Length: 290
Image (cartoon, rainbow, N blue to C red; front, top):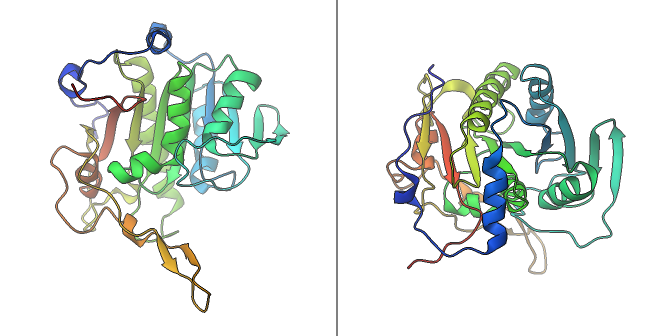
């Protein structure tokens, strides 16, 4: 499989110019200034907490194969689908071992405390790998993984959010599936760092597990530059609780982006449904239309 990212259309065609606050310009200058072949130090976080099987495979690969110096700053428990929410505290920070802390707050809080108090030398934030996809408008706006990367971008750091979509049901992946996805994600992340594009705040990367399309066909995955599928959203995220007095429980059946209408051509949903890797450049803000 070629690891070369396909040519991206001009960013000026995808992002209309807008007035920005001076601090945002300064953040962009800081983010684009580094020409080092590797980050000074990487802040690693996720939104699934310490017990994620994907994160447990990811950290040693980044440290030992990429050779990157890492500071691990995780939510103490699962914080999925919290977007870029911030905890107001008091926030408990627990030292786990040298270079690893667990924080009693959402992923964006982990990044903020990590960058401003615990490891300000970090110049790169990598969030994930998320257990499951983060593609389509609804998921991108709701993801705690992307929210963590967004917090890094706001702080002027380069940031990448990584997710591992799966098509065969919960926990039906193998360790080999995970290891292959980790290698692809690491290769893509390393290349993004080395070839960071001007004007980009963060990237959203999705690497499907198992080397297959949503239909189950084997795939030699291509790495595709994509856009967010703006037509893909979600419906109900809750279900009535059985034998309750009107309570509702988390039941995100409306989150399935692999079913239903045809996805937008060139979008992230279409890429992963075909079993390919999606790499989407994002801006850390809601830009007004002129």
